[in-house]
Image (tube, rainbow, N blue to C red; front, side):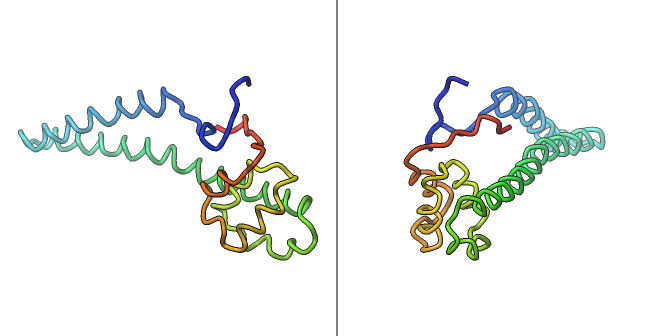
Length: 144
């Protein structure tokens, strides 16, 4: 992959999902709801409910895999920390939150110990601050 990743350019947008699918699902649902309010019938109500269900299904079709992805990242980073961190930090790996681990996955092994210490000291509050503190970005080209 030729594109360079950084803290500001690593987010992955899939236009067909994030824009086209959203419009194809959300806009008709709004129309169905408006139609139901303006000219109520059992048929229009059922259509509006179906539309709302499709919007929810589309939303959860994105949210559930992101939750699984976060769990996998947490596991991968804890395994990497066991391998890379100095012995004095091994006992504190469990104190690093999933949010911080998601940010730390972009840190190279050489920077990991310092960043983990900063996280544990409360200097880096969330994944964004961790990402911004990384000096040499370790890209992830396999994310979905």
